[in-house]
Length: 618
Image (cartoon, rainbow, N blue to C red; front, side, top):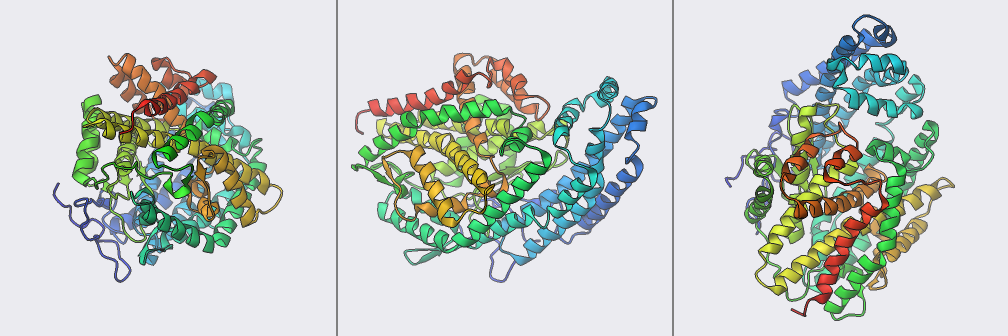
């Protein structure tokens, strides 16, 4: 693949920050081309759109605020509301384009003061502009249900029914207009500000690993090294720096938990996670069934597997830094970028050539930023931006097998986002529970392709073990995270939690989920501090377990009746946010409301562990 030109050169950098990292052992890693959104942070096009966004929001309020009830009572109400919602949707697309661009620029180097100021300034301008739109959904929810239903009979307006129903689901938790405006405007100086503080702090942390000063991602990467001493040194470095910053992360956690408690109390949410369930369009009892099923499966999944892994390592117990260590006597060569790309695209193509074609655009059109750089956002994500543009993928690729699976995961998101985009800015977004389906399914396809190509029993064992670990991390670990969050947010209602208390809760939850075969030694109590989901999206984490168990069930359907499956699967992704999970899963004969549903996914993990136990020592 030809090396792309420097697509981030238009962004001013702090002195000494190179445009590209030096070529590594993984080949040329791509950087994304953000000019598809705007040419530069100081471009006339961006400034014009910021001004247009402010003007369009104000004009929309001027045209319709206080008039929706009269319009609903008038002639051709459905036709008029179609025009209004279409206008609103176009404004949302414009706002989303601006916000996405600012966020992506910022994620490229969260420690750069120029990028940080740009991101903050755009965020403030868009918050001010969008304040003029607040009235619309609030006023919609005060309209008569019978009259609204009659208006939705008009096909032009009726196509927005899924969005209207989602908006009206928020009605019981809606506040008086001025309070909603206050919550909206203060978001910049409250939750968003604390999120930004967390991001910039995490990106600025440096860890001394045997004399080499590294950022978080590269340090975490050492925990998957084959040499135990490297893992131990990196784990100690992480624990030390996390401990030195414990006071700040404790303050951030306490403040955001209190902020959420205030919002939930004013809105009347009964349970601390109900706002997340509502956003996910999933019933609390469905999530509770998932959580209880996974809790009950801890002994036969994580406990059982880590006991087996400890035996492979010749130990009674694994140290916590051994949890993700590669198996002994296994090839741990770095995997080049081109090989990773070909592996994922090959897996996608075998399942559906159309899916592979969509994923290939991410490589060919510079929609991926894969390299590790100082200050770059940690982890990985696929950002959908807006339907009038295209998604972008961020990775921190370091040549590990798990990085290949992460590429498959994020490209699954990307394919999903491309397929759902024709639904428009209001209905393309997918609830988080189903948003993880395509990503985890992409991982499964890639794993199955790799497993089929395993050259010998030892390689097959290593691949199976790696997949089991990924599934435990996706199911058991994420439900443990959810349990941790629930305990933190519940206790926060009674007052601030000390760092020691948060660490104690973390250790209790981790010990329960991982079992006796892992020794959670000194230092591990601080490892909760870097989990960004706790900060950015409270209670998001159960969506991963939801997606993994769902995909296991989907894949079982695929294996038993593959004829026409790909078409039904892509149609499910293309639905975006237009259908409830029960409707989307019906063509596959699946129902997440059935408690037995979750056992199908958990049983697959258990069978794979059993297969590992049955293998002769390789």
